[in-house]
Structures are given as structure tokens and as C-alpha cells.
Length: 187
Picture 1 (spheres, rainbow, N blue to C red):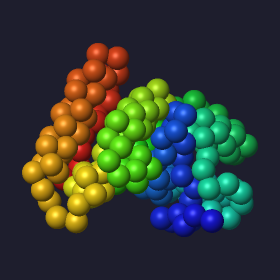
Picture 2 (cartoon, one colour):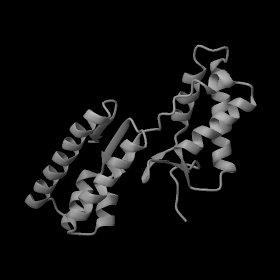
Picture 3 (cartoon, rainbow, N blue to C red):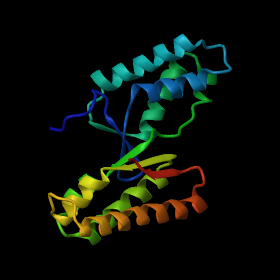
């Protein structure tokens, strides 16, 4: 059994990227859809709470595909007679966070090629799934795990630069295909 950061399931974006389903993101999605309609903000927020409760109390899985989530939100809006709000839903998934430390753990100490393959897979999945924000985090811990070092060494510094350069290069490549995609390494 896995422990979720909150009671809501993760959102699968693409084939293998996950995003945290955060109440603020749900609120923003529904209030933006209701904006400019006859639906007041308080009602959009109330619907958002209903979606949260469904996901927390009745959804059986720990991961939900973004398409399935948006379909459930639209179905809820249709059932309430809010077709005009459902038509305005922006189906942009929430920000994707990629843990370099977790990728390093999965790759194994010293397996840098496997690490970069996993990172490339996560980045492609997030981009293909429609993510507009991808945050890569855990750089120092990921580097130390790959190098198998408790202290920061010159080898760590070299690998850190390689990873930073790789993410920067990937960001430039994605700009040609997905100019709206923001890819960055969190401090």
C-alpha cells in the first residue's frame, strides 16, 4: 500500500507521468470554467469540493488518468444542467513533478544511462500527456544516490552539470513541439 500526500489519487498524465491532484488546482479549473457564465464562484467551488469528496471517498484507485478525471468532472456538470460550464473546462492537467532522487533509486547506483533513459521517458510522457508545467526536483539527492556518495564530490558536481544540461536541452527541444510547456529544475 502506498501513502498518498493527501486523500486524493494521483493523476496519470501520458503513459507514465504522475501529478498530485491538489484541491487548489481543482478549484481553479472549475472557477475558470464558470467564469463568464451565470454560475457564481461559490457554486464552482462547491462542485470542486464534491469532486474532491468523490475522489477521496469513493474512487477505488490510487491513480486516475487525466482523461477519466475530466470525463467525470464533465459528467458531474452535465448532471447538474451546467453543460455550458462543461464546454469551457480547460483540460490542461496539473503540473507534473519528476523526482530525480526517485529516478536514481529506480536506476540503481552507478547506472547513469538507465537514469537518463528513465528521465527521458518521464519527460516524453509528461509532454505527450498535455502537461504545461514540468518541475524536476531532488537534483542533489538524486546525484548523490547515483554516485553512491554521502558527501558532495567533484564527481557529483560533474553529474549535476550533466543532468542540468540534459534538462535544459530537453526544454529547448520541447519548445519546438510544445511551446507552452515549461520545464525547469526546482531549486
